[in-house]
Image (cartoon, rainbow, N blue to C red):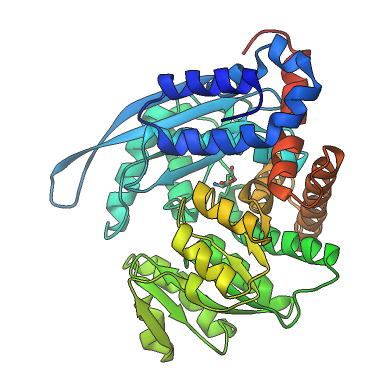
Length: 450
Ligand code: GLU
């Protein structure tokens, strides 16, 4: 499967050891494919078993979360924290509350986070966590009780210099507030143990917008390479959560037009663009309502609604999946190619199936990988940590300027790493290689520890 004997050996071991973990294996395989030339050129990696070590999490915590719902019923969920790699800094990464959460999903996200955090240039290791708890339709009090129970166990494993969780799907400002309150109550300690906090208690300006803004800054850099710009371009976006919201906002600011957003129920096509304050704010309202139906947008603004469909059938210049893993499959990829779309920009973590990636690549679509594109979220989390350590806070302009600079740096590192190994323009390879180099060098310097 790989040309390298070493990679074949490691990967087949990994398959044996993780038989029920398709998402994790998918994420690892994609990275190893990119790393072949690097591994070939540097025997030191094999001599030090770097790939074996990088594909095994340093620690994987699974725990029970019991909580009482509004009807007095006792519920049991499963909680996770994967502390994947601490070579370059304390574990850092979000918490996801979603029914699709499994050990495999947690491990794929933790593995990817290690590379992503490395790419930001900030000193953060890789971690991820969450629960199969489904927040949909739950009352505020239920969410609070769940978060308190979840943190009661999680608090034993995290800390401002050990592991710093944040949000992800199903975990936003409200949840982070409840989690923070419970941590403080248990420890009697006010520290920057979580990021994405409210502005009143140590949160950073621009953190809610950061993932979407960062993704669009990345697109800006990418388009420069091709002598193009965002102005006048049309975009298909999926999801309507925090990431889609920031993306839509920034595309508008830079003169582009987003014509789709989606939910689990289908997607809307708004030919005029999701471009007024009322429309953009409505994305937040939909999220707050907990209904999870994008049809509400179509009803309110009288635009096309496509039930049970995904937005990738629409003809646009740039496609940006912002919802969840594997949301773009081979059929979608065929649509994207048939529509003549030139730029495919992953914003959600691993939104594309392996088969779809192959197809897009084979048809010369420019692919920007999520590890690089969505790193702005965790980068501003890193800036939140810096502000907390200083007991200080920067203005929105300062944070935004730093974010823009970080995204330009990520693009540059990604582009140059691909070029260095003779794969100019292959941003998937570039992101994986650039992320890998820093982490593996740190591991080599620290001896055989993890
Ligand atoms: N969940 C986000 C991600 O996938 C952000 C993590 C963070 O801010 O720590 O990168």
